[in-house]
Amino acid sequence: MRLEYTRASAAYEVPRDGERRELRGLRCNAMLEIADIARALIQGGRLRYLLPEWLDGFHRADASERGAVIARAPEPTGDPVDDAYLAAVVEHLATLAGIEVPLWTESPSRFLARPYYPSGVGELLKSVLREESPLAFRRRNLFVSANAIERPSTPASWRTRNTLIRKRGDE
Image (cartoon, rainbow, N blue to C red; front, side, top):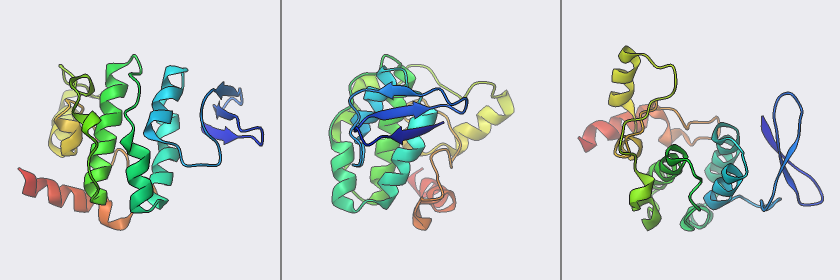
């Protein structure tokens, strides 16, 4: 699945089967804010399809653009896992980029009461995820792989190896 933009300034989520679905309210030809991703989730978009493109844009942006696209608090999506995940992504990236972490990421609605693991994960892998999840995810009870949000566009200094080294120093 990918996001597709048309000249009419409409954004569409395009699954692999080719059925296009319009995502109302997304701005085209501009870097999306994290709040735009939440709006697309509310409209039925899926995080695993929306987040990669947003991450690529964030990685290519300069520091002022990065700060601007994470500053505005996203609306609640209706899914506590998605809400916590967006906050974790923003906190993690802001920390790596050396920019201020927005205050909205500390809202109680951005934390889970119970641990969350990707579906189908066995007990052995859960213990690995508890160990290697970046701090911004762990403190929200989200357990993901150390490279869960890495993309080819991720700056080299932000990659997993460096994140794991920094994480060990945090504990």
